[in-house]
Image (tube, rainbow, N blue to C red; front, side, top):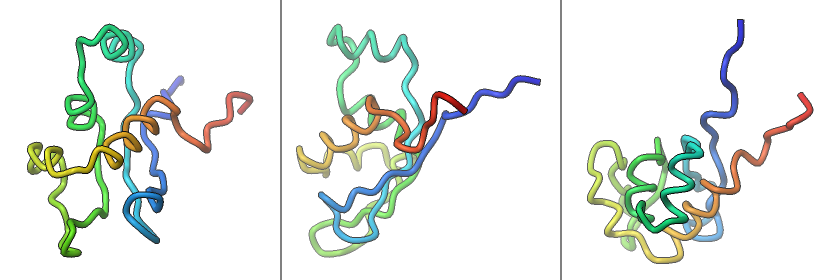
Length: 100
């Protein structure tokens, strides 16, 4: 029986959050991608809908709440942190092999 693959993945975010940091993402649909390109879906909405977990911290080293628990935590992200998440959403799973 068929089963959809590649619907979620974890990526390193060491470039913005330091060694060992990661974010877990759920992939965007074609419809969401079209809406984002048309300006109908902003980065905050994409992050709220597609970040399923992370081990990020604030400036004092305290853990940030999970997006699912406190969606407004997105407002605390730096522009660079948000850019990294959105880039990884549209880049997809780095371990995806279309030939498998």
